[in-house]
Length: 426
Ligand SMILES: Cc1cc2nc3c(=O)[nH]c(=O)nc-3n(C[C@H](O)[C@H](O)[C@H](O)COP(=O)(O)OP(=O)(O)OC[C@H]3O[C@@H](n4cnc5c(N)ncnc54)[C@H](O)[C@@H]3O)c2cc1C
Image 1 (tube, helix red, strand yellow):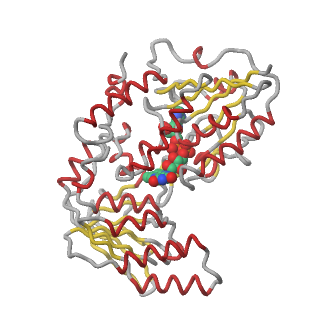
Image 2: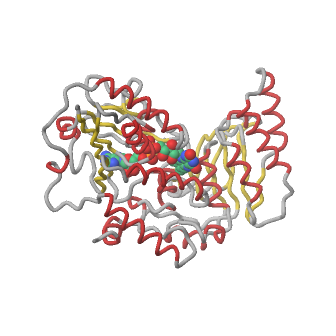
Image 3: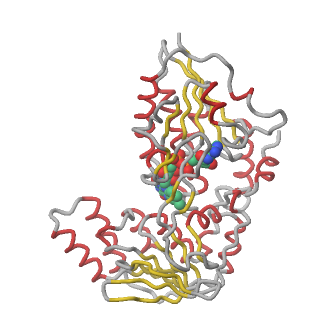
């Protein structure tokens, strides 16, 4: 009976869904050993370090991941980084197939003057900072000014804007990293703009997230009714409005019509604002846009760009347009496959990665030849390197949850690698 070894690099949603697809493909004639390699001591990828802390329901998908991890043919190798602790050639030599599920973590740049000023940062820094990603635990965010501008018209921009605009009390019972929650409590930011380059009909927000905004207890949310009417008309002029857009525009209209309460905190959406230049002497003081009615300058103290992500380069893999070069998930001339954001780029919700990974795993299975029998990752990692296996991770997870229970939170995150390793120490 053929038995194959598959290495999955990256323990985010796409990595787990690839493992699940392999597990679902096991038959009397075909079995797999699945080794998942993750650079952090914590798995779950952006479910831990991307999804907003005030959206805890989304994170319950982690239960599915833990079920996959509990299967006998699955092993976790956390705290092991491809490119540092092992090479891709190490894996391709020892494994029948290698699935790259490494996501995309580098924030895209606007390419406009002033982007390098202090207090001009990226969602790729701000989000992992408030979510306690160890790489950003010491990142410095300056919330001493009054006005913040978030550039982008997708859910990541909305997350950044909302986290800055809500009363931090509303985050007290979430798993926001302690260092971020402390600073948000001291924040002077009271006015937040989210700006999109094109009209509202092109925005990539999703309706459920938009519908949550009028429910904010201490923040008034503004969208111009005229903008929405114009977007509706523009969309209608092109033919029948498709369902997703209709429901987005409906959700935006609801925001526009919701009575305002004169709260000190506000979140305002601006469309058809193309950033031209970030202005300031050493640090951000204003941002200049071109708009259909001419240039507009908004004085501000913080600019966050949330306009997409690119994959980080990994030696041995070729990248094009910010993602791993692949055709339908196959990396040509190799036993390497790509799934998730590393394959498609930064698009799609968590669930999108499930069907996508299943398709790639079908291709992988159709490519399998004679099984390899020359060992596995355990022979590759240096003696003494601390590997976070599933049992180790379960101890970290339980310790964080226990720390949260005392404070009415789902968990208190440890935010440095040494602290995480200490938490799970047997
Ligand atoms: C800010 C933000 C908020 C989001 N909110 C939502 C939401 O509310 N709902 C929703 O459905 N979707 C949301 N998404 C989208 C969702 O998170 C993605 O669809 C999904 O996480 C992509 O999965 P992935 O496995 O491809 O990548 P990732 O989740 O990024 O996982 C990649 C993993 O690979 C690891 N890795 C990278 N390089 C290496 C290496 N060299 N060696 C070993 N391991 C490595 C990383 O540490 C990481 O754990 C959000 C995304 C972002 C950015």
